[in-house]
Length: 246
Length: 377
Image 1 (tube, rainbow over the protein chains, first blue to last red):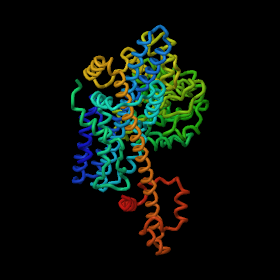
Image 2: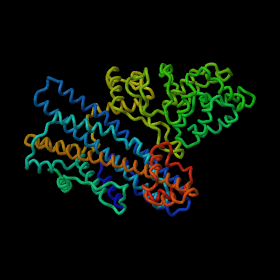
Image 3: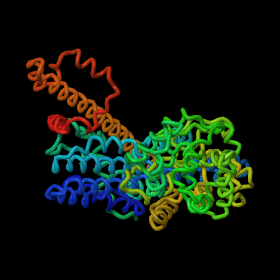
Image 4: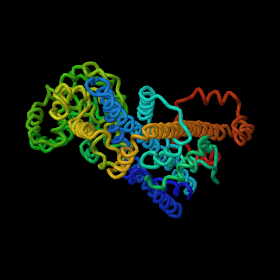
């Protein structure tokens, strides 16, 4: 039940609009158990496949909606930057203020896109797991061919989003060169950064790490454990996040 | 959708001598469980006249007193001597795209209207068909051909190579629904997947028409001239675009969380401007890290499945060849029980050379793959 628990936790913590869009892992697991004890094998498999297809459709619809939004917002951010750089009337202060806003928006935008990729990945993982369970408990051969189909689905082909993410990073590097961090800044940062999209990102990283810890069914089909060098900082964020901002 | 209609209307087909073997080919493919959207695309031009007449069958009955199923159908099948679509194209119209001859592109605007009309089953269309049916030679298939080419391209398009005379960007990737035949009916419209290039074209069109407030979906659609784009797509995209412009960066966090952060920042702003910057920088770093890990994970997952496929294929071939070679030599039986390394290198070489065989086909003895698969897992 480890993945199921992790998934549930993740769904609870995720962005509000996204909560209904994840895989119904628990229900599907129950169904698999039901099927393994039922005698009507052929019909059950069709039903199971039908449900899985519905889930896939759900992912695809949501994913493509988000992707469309991201494409629009990406272009809009670029336009904003262009406008700010081209308007010669505004003062230094106004320019700085606008750029600060753009920066904040861009970072959040970047974060949201990454969370969408995370969404895609979690659902894929869930699918792979449930298919594996199905094959194991019913002796079926559904997993391999079905997962091939899943690999080609829009929700899993995240290349475009990754490209947008990288473009964002490049833009950020150009516009906002980095500054050296002091010790005092660290504490302030930890306090301020504990909410919203950032919190979700941190949570997602931790979840990912937990999900990939060795399991009882580790095989050559499983992913290796995740090694995050910054895990201390991430732990620190996790602890601080319930603390409200002053 | 039309899937239920298919068997009824085509029952006469097998008895009709078809001028093109592709008709039979299409018929079998439609029963192999393709989604309702894809099946639409697989209808070749030659029988498209028949498909179109599904709603006009009552007219046929009225006009032809004799048994229509055997008499008038051959007429339909005979006519397309001058059709722009060549029979050879029909062969790969199952999952691939119907290659659209350039002459049809000029009629894009027309078929858009016809597509809309078909969707709404406009009765105004049928008088035309009535006329055509009376004319037994069906001398003017052109409009119908174009319509169906358009119709099929709307429903079946995936990523297409750029077609001359359309806009410079690649055409829209329309994704067919993932469901098999079990889900017919619930997915009537294929999903549209936007790309940055397409959005650029959209923005250009909008700007030419005077901005997002003044531009209309129909105007933008006409301006964009992109194959397969419908007014519904443009309409919803325009709505999103307008929202994005007049409410920059609406995050999906909800208003309350946003307010907190803005208020906090403004009160701390003077002293901690640098801290804010650094907080953002750190946020960015963590996000980058997550993305990196996600990409790695995805690549791993892809490779795992690829390996799984390969292993499965190898095992199946081994099992098959093991059973096939039972009689000639007993040594091969031993080799199938050992690890994959043991079968002669020639066998491995032949496996690699032979990519055509689908490892997932259940045509051969089912017990073999299952045993092999179990060993695999």
